[in-house]
Length: 488
Ligand code: ADP
Image (cartoon, rainbow, N blue to C red; front, side, top):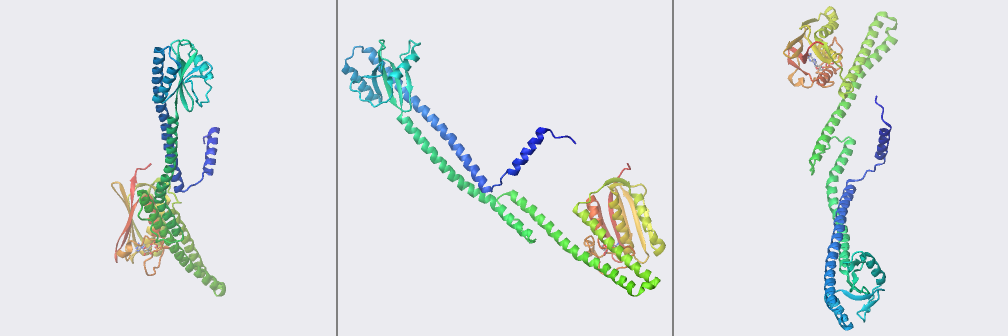
């Protein structure tokens, strides 16, 4: 055997541990959590995307607007170099009102120079901002300033003119962006809650539909467990899989019911069949003890009855065991190619003592060297049972015909007797365990009422065609068709 690598051993152990720890959840719970997770993921992804794009688009728009205002302001200040304080104030006021911005002129320290009456409440340290802008644009002589932003505002800061002593600072509030973001956030939260509710409802309905048939099936299975074999698993299910499951469970129920019936029948029959020989054994043993103990002749007669009845019990037990094993599938078939012709002869020879002792007459018509591929021992049981029955049930002439003939690919085994035959209505039932036609029959070969059930079980396991042709008053022919094979 190949040795498992260390890694594989470790992986197997981890898998086993994981499986052992795995919790089992109800369909409702799994469905609900999957739905909810899916909905939340979708909403969070779309929500974040919306947040990101809205912010970006709005900011770009505000930045473009601000750039236009800056361009306009520079154009004005470049063209009007010698403005009075009032004119500067007026222009900055005009910009602020008409363009919805905060426009001012700062000195190098960040102090507002214009508008002169500036009363802004901004907390920014413009001095630092100016220093950082100057630092950033110092290598680019074409640049006059830069746009900057913080959480609440977007700024432009740049030199007012070539003297580089004053700075133009125009800012625009980002309030609209922040407000929009808040709306999107609230929307997303609302959608998540809505999605959770919908997921709860939808998964509830689906889970109910999904789990209802399972619950029904479980309840029915519990009924079946209690021994109620009338239970019907089929019902009005939404899914074809459930119908298939119901069909499977129904056939399982039928099989269980049959096996239960068979078991009860078996116990009843076995106890009945065992009781007779046991009563006989006890009766004859008492007789030996009380009456025939000293009489050798009688004692031999009585002990012989005990031996015969004990034999009958032993045969009954071994037949029942054989049949149960074959039926339960415990007894696997050992296929092998063998000479069926010789085998049939050897079985006939076992019955030859009946020719000498009880005037039976066996008429074999066996074609030589016919080979089959089958379980030799089991096929022996089939032939032995069929010949034994023919011996038991043949007519006054005590004739038994055994023929083995090949026809194309088939080998026909036919065992014929000249007995009273089997009634049409009985033919189907004789193969059932413990079936025995009415009336007692004196048998030279011991019968237990199981012989034909064993024949049936073995033939069916081999997939062989078998049966009986019978005419009441004339006799019966039991047959089995084998598949011919070449000798090995
Ligand atoms: P048993 O022979 O021990 O009763 P079997 O299973 O071998 O049990 O046979 C079942 C029944 O089938 C028999 O009781 C008998 O009624 C009928 N049967 C079997 N073989 C023959 C036969 N060759 N002729 C007439 N009836 C038969």
